[in-house]
Length: 154
Image (tube, rainbow, N blue to C red; front, side, top):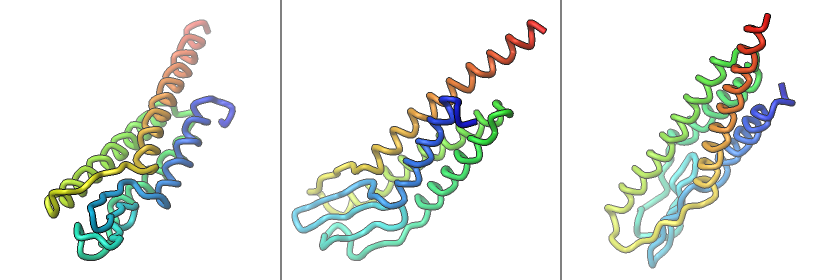
């Protein structure tokens, strides 16, 4: 149901996670150029850090799976426990994306000693969606407690 505030949190979370497919996560710069980590590739912009752009699929596929899971969970409002499980799995996958980004940053950092890492909007969006998912779980738990208290009265 869309009038529940946790459904709004989940909808905003889904929109933000889908938007990360089109924006960069990290920019790693050195004195010659920069490398951007996107959802489907590590793009090389005239940098010595990486010889050429590299296609990666792990982050993009994980983002698509998260988006599908969150959108499905919006419509599972009558099955609150299943809804919470799906959101928790999405949160675990989001933390996995952050771990993958840290891994790629580590791999790229071993190639050159002088570089700077700049988090971009994609990384910020993942953090925001984690908070929104946590707020949605809190709201779902409150709904579940309300339903249980009403059932006790009957």
